[in-house]
Image 1 (tube, rainbow over the protein chains, first blue to last red):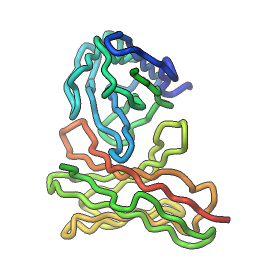
Image 2 (spheres, rainbow over the protein chains, first blue to last red; image 1 turned 180 degrees about the horizontal axis):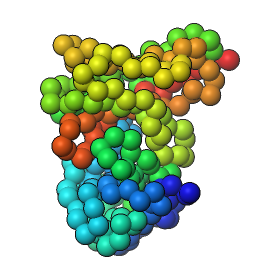
Image 3 (spheres, helix red, strand yellow; image 1 turned 135 degrees about the vertical axis):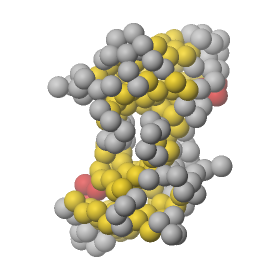
Image 4 (cartoon, helix red, strand yellow; image 1 turned 180 degrees about the vertical axis):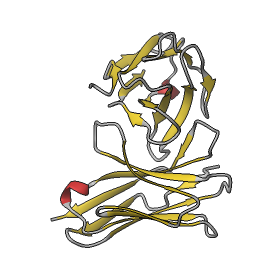
Length: 111
Length: 112
């Protein structure tokens, strides 16, 4: 089992560009999450999903959109990237509320 | 306003000694707590958890203590090993809500 994988691992964008981060899990988990990690601030929840076709806002949703068309995939989109979105993005999945499994992260730089 | 706080950004201990990582929270609705460990360039990995109905949970070298009245939890690692060197995140959750609230992390360095 690969667990939780994230694509790409690194990306550099210019302000105003768009991109999509892909998260995939092979553990048949219902719940999936997108977090961002910034220095000194821990992990903050952007959006999450409690099942295929459902999404919900987390703590810092502005500037991001998500989609969960398939149970195993959770996509995070940036429509118009801003320097404030420079961060490390982590995807996670879980069977229930406890024990979230995290992917390796995507380091995004917006110039 | 941070609901989960880890006030020590870093901690250095000698191999074989005890490491104590601390975490404070403000939201009394939190009813379960977790510790995650993170190595550089990797995602956090789940370490140990505790429910609010307990005050202690032990798993091998790792023990988590919860003091609900003080809204404080701590992670004890005994004995500490160089491989324990990582960033440790405290997280809190509320049953029925899917999200976890994370602290800012404590970097543990175990000196050989």
